[in-house]
Image 1: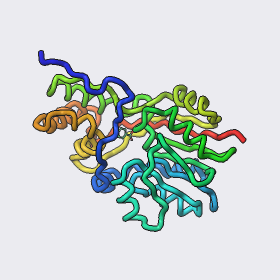
Image 2 (image 1 turned 180 degrees about the vertical axis):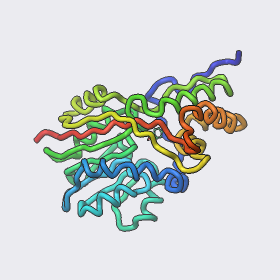
Image 3 (image 1 turned 120 degrees about the horizontal axis):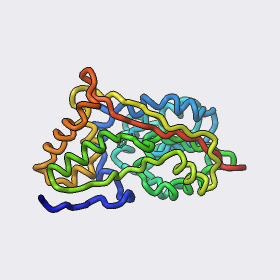
Image 4 (image 1 turned 90 degrees about the horizontal axis):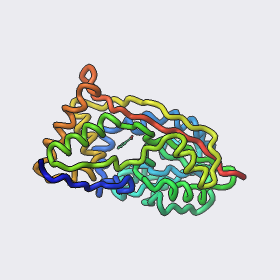
Length: 266
Ligand code: BEZ
């Protein structure tokens, strides 16, 4: 048996790829923002409110929030994503900013976040930063991967990496339970008013949806694999996932979302 290396030993490893690919993101992953309209309804943005879209990516939801008449700032730690968002929506206020170092020019009425917080295992720091930029009475509305998210994909990928390279990898993302995340928010000083963990099987686009997804989102895991092994890992992961996730010719990612709303006490 080959040597077993561990290159992601703790859940605190940064899962973010060194560079995001905004082209692939907008071309093949539009489900990320298309599935979020009910989250915008939960936020219920009002004209004149000051709102931050935290982890705004290529800006589609920032645009939706701004259409409500709110004053919105979209922030993302990826300069590539912000550049693409600015090109698509030149009128929006879009900034490169890390959730671990959040600032705001003024206290905010709301912080909104979709499909971003599972990229940041240091959830306590993020929650404290959110509290600091909210006004008393302000709200935090977020959705991201919850406990059990992409269980099948992750198991398929870990098996493929182990078989092809002898390496063991851990889940680098942050997928908490309701109780774990409510405790994070309460420790930071927020009052949790709503929390829900639910399955959202998410169809991809076309026969290459699984490999596109792996290339788009699993950069840190794949980049750590010797180049000549990467295609074999991707193909083996597809084979592992096919029996459960390829249905009637469509790849369906086993997403599980954690949706929360919390208020900063007045
Ligand atoms: C998600 O949206 O659940 C997700 C996306 C990429 C990697 C991991 C999870």
